[in-house]
Length: 574
Ligand SMILES: Nc1ncnc2c1ncn2[C@@H]1O[C@H](COP(=O)(O)OP(=O)(O)OP(=O)(O)O)[C@@H](O)[C@H]1O
Image (cartoon, rainbow, N blue to C red; front, side, top):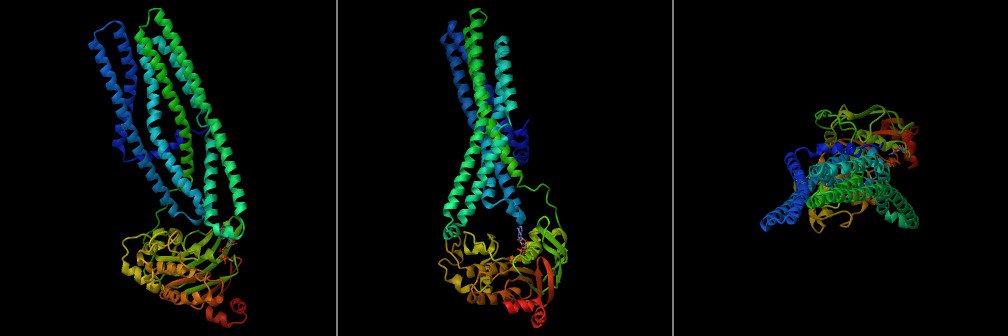
């Protein structure tokens, strides 16, 4: 039998913590609604029997008023319970969404390789939103409808035990059948959701690269790919719908049988004089009422399976083990040492990107790393920044293995600048402070001055409030690169890791950037990765990498002067 969707949903319970008053109120409103639904046929019976036995009009009026009161109370209880359940579901799923975003923000580069941004958005937003709507209905209906089925059987038993005897097997049979069918659609629903997430990931990637696609004439191929993916999504959605539709069809059939049975038994008992007309009416009303919870449970099962699939997909995003709580105070003040200690590291098993790499930088020392494309230069920086961890050996900052350092502490003291600069659709101020309102404008202006951007920002229409990024003010590659340096100045780190910070710049813009770079490196430990060895004038030491291994390590001036060194060869070739 397929895994129970209810068991899949159990991890959500912890997000309901702190909601006890609302849950208790719901626990009162739901059974109240059930009792009020059961009261209606009972009052109908009283009305019919009173009318047929010529009771005074006053008695009929009293029953009618009770009927009306029960209907109004039912409406109020239903609206109240609906509102409460949906508030609970939204609050719980908002907590879940916040938890997912918090976890995702802390995950390594490998995680983002596994889940492209479009797919992540689909999981964190669409899956959680779907959960919220399903949970609000689930909280109510599965419990309430099951109660209603039990209540109807009890009411029928009170009316006439023979009636209960006819209905009980039909209701029990339907529930058993439903139980057997639950979970059957889950693999199909999961396949449909995966297809839809992949489609979103595809759209996000292709739309972000629209310019490249246009320039390279790849628009037609992209549309053909889109068509193929949409056809696949349609096929999976159709398969899931086919499996899901079997349940309502089965329940419709069985409940029609129960109504026909109710009619037959009521007529038979009535004509034998064993049932009053009012009781026969009530029995028929209960039979019709029984269809409602059974059908509601059926349609909810489909949602339940959707929700279970969503939870399973969301669980992939949450770490399996709780994060360790590393030492938060392990870094000494001032410029930090940085070292790799016999590090071997692979992205893919059996294909080491770094082999037995070792070096150690004293506080304030600057290291330049050169080597051919794919030799492992950027990997060194990623390990020092703890974006990945070595298989063997250790990456150390301030003498501590980065694995043992709190990520927040490490990020405050170490800055990584890459060629890719992310400019947010936000004000210049927020782009520098990363949305921290505690940073005052004086520090922001100082950072911009240190990065050599004073003239640029003063010319902006709204100064620090100018909105940058997609759909707003664009920036040149050089300005973006200087903005990334201004971010580092603002944070004032002790160790700076620069990954080809001038690679996208023309020689003129690179020359403008060099003074800002020099100011950035002064008084700090630094590792600078460069393709072009002549751009490493500011470093003290050079490390040459080849196929992931250190093939040369020495003082820059000594290596540059030694015609037999690799670095000398690279300078000549450059
Ligand atoms: N995310 C990744 N997944 C799998 N392999 C990777 C990944 N990133 C890098 N690699 C591989 O690891 C090796 C080292 O990559 P790295 O980016 O460190 O080289 P690099 O010297 O910085 O290259 P470049 O000069 O082109 O930036 C390369 O063979 C590369 O293909």
